[in-house]
Length: 331
Image (cartoon, rainbow, N blue to C red):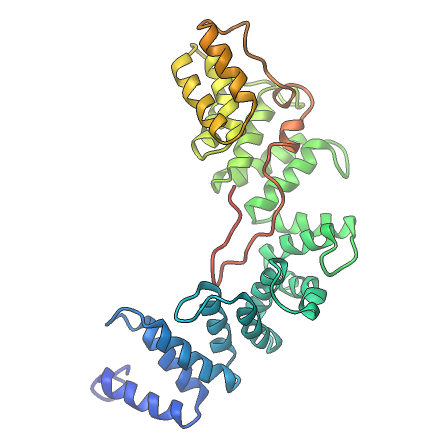
């Protein structure tokens, strides 16, 4: 196959691999499965791949079991079946593969797997988190916060959220919210700002909106309307409904420059289309009064209370470990 010390012959190499696989060699069966999905000479044949991975997995091949679980997750070559995916991820996870343990735990949180799996889910996350998996650390925090397979423990939940915030944008956003609101300790606007900026740099629209809210005033930070508008725009362009509403209000009132009612209307319409009810009132005010200065209102979540960072609609959720299949949170 690789042409080591002999002339490369892919057809002959595949023939010998098949013979070894049919003779019961799990490594050979896994390699044949890989050929059907990775060889690049022909389009992938996932049906053939599934058959060879199954042969290898049934013989105890850990990587093939995980790969077969992936096929059942995606429905490639087999009918999509979360419970069958859980079965093969369990085989690989029990053999000690930490990635499979995390993938299986994510499936359990989606309602697949057995009752025993659901009872052990936090343990799987803890194992992966202890090995340095920051996504698993965030998920463990969620388990502790929501009593998923473990008794609730706010202190440990906060610990794992801090750990996850070392590199997971969603955790940076969540922990930044806690710091900005003073939950679990004194208000830490500077630390929250740093976390939001890190998450925003990774494209997290909720963090962008939070930055806009902080700079809009009333959050123990000097008011900077130009910067606030810039962050509202960045989040709005990524589809964040509350940011679209706030950008529309800034443009309508000319808070950070000249008023632009036409563009404001466009953002109000986009926010309204996402179900932001306040946007309808702003649209009505804009239509009724082109000057609009007397008609629009800035809500508490831009001045004073800090509630924008708490109630911006970007809720907690499990972050999917994406070694097999990216099913991540949408900022």
